[in-house]
Amino acid sequence: MKAVKGLDLERYMGRWYEIASFPSRFQPKDGVDTRATYTLNPDGTVHVLNETWNGGKRGFIQGSAYKADPKSDEAKLKVKFFVPPFLPVIPVTGDYWVLYIDPEYQHAVIGQPSRSYLWILSRTAHMEEETYKQLVEKAVEEGYDVSKLHKTPQSDTPPESNTAPDDTKGVWWLKSIFGK
Image (tube, rainbow, N blue to C red; front, side, top):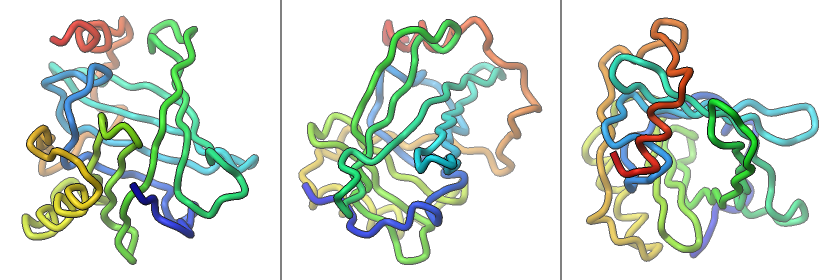
């Protein structure tokens, strides 16, 4: 599996919408408008904010990302979150490899070495079907079983973080752990 070389981390920062992903026990099954916002920290690490809406409430988790090997030019990052989100005490670290990014930094394919996780991301909430098919093909080229890929519902007008009540009890997270 090959990761992108020479990723411009500053250009990569900002909001990315989840167009499709492999189902994960860390995300609710019926989450909508799922997205990630990345912000470069002064120390070169990345602040990560993952958000999804479920039952009209905003579920979110914050974490950090950093280069797995600071000397490498490959886009192999580690992400660390503290769970559960309502009482963040247990660190969970995972791989975040940028497998493909288009020259304009508008579409990306994210995965990791075990091929258990896959995300297709876009700067916009919707993507042309032809572009989607091309990104799925990139995942196939990296050895992914794309039959597990699930499209993420996105609104025509994605919600803003402050327009919905937060799920402060972490109900979405608890349900996702039990496969609900």
